[in-house]
Length: 164
Ligand SMILES: [Zn+2]
Image (cartoon, rainbow, N blue to C red):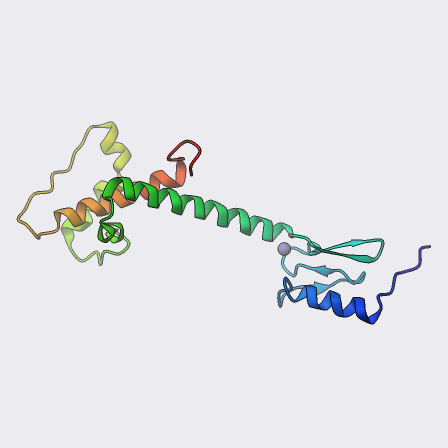
């Protein structure tokens, strides 16, 4: 039977100080004195033979959170790149989306339906003609369609070699 290592006060203080950098309210200390994730029960510290190794371990749910964050960041970067290709520096157009639209205009509802069926429109060669006087929202509607397709494309495809 191995003797359990007991930390002195200096080591305990040092450990508590280090823990402040990564300890969450939901985390707990297990019977061996190791800090564990309250969500996935994974160890959050590197211990060897009952001795703390001054190392922070990423638990599996944190790993998954980081993976999702990286994926979301990649998609956001792709969207921004495609918007730049599509609209250039006219940042106003980046904000024209169906999500931002108040959906009160029945014409906009039809335009959204067209955008939502973009694959069918593409494969069956169905176009959409936006027609009207200056200021009636043609550019706005076109930008909403473009942004909708950009977001869908960016969530599924890389947009440039060695890029995002
Ligand atoms: Zn976890």
